[in-house]
Length: 84
Image 1: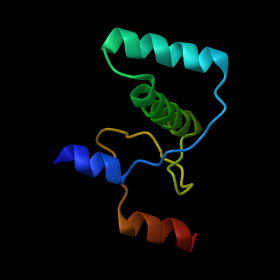
Image 2: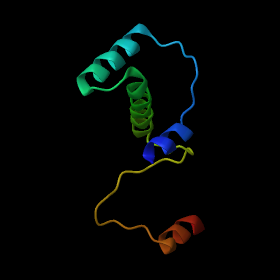
Image 3: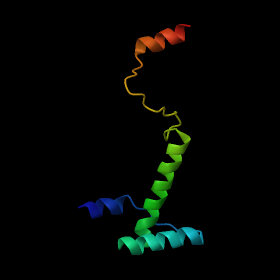
């Protein structure tokens, strides 16, 4: 059943891929026993996630602040800050 779902979300296209990227995908596919076609989307997704982490923003552009344990910001605190 998951194979049918995977096929529904897959788009086939023609891409120009740099030699070093193709080589990395080929090596990874060989090491994992998969195909280059299976590895390229995973590598692309990992790159996008790493970029989002470095930029500190979500996919819709809002900054993501690091969590501070024990520090909670309440609606009242926001209202007070906006009133100043």
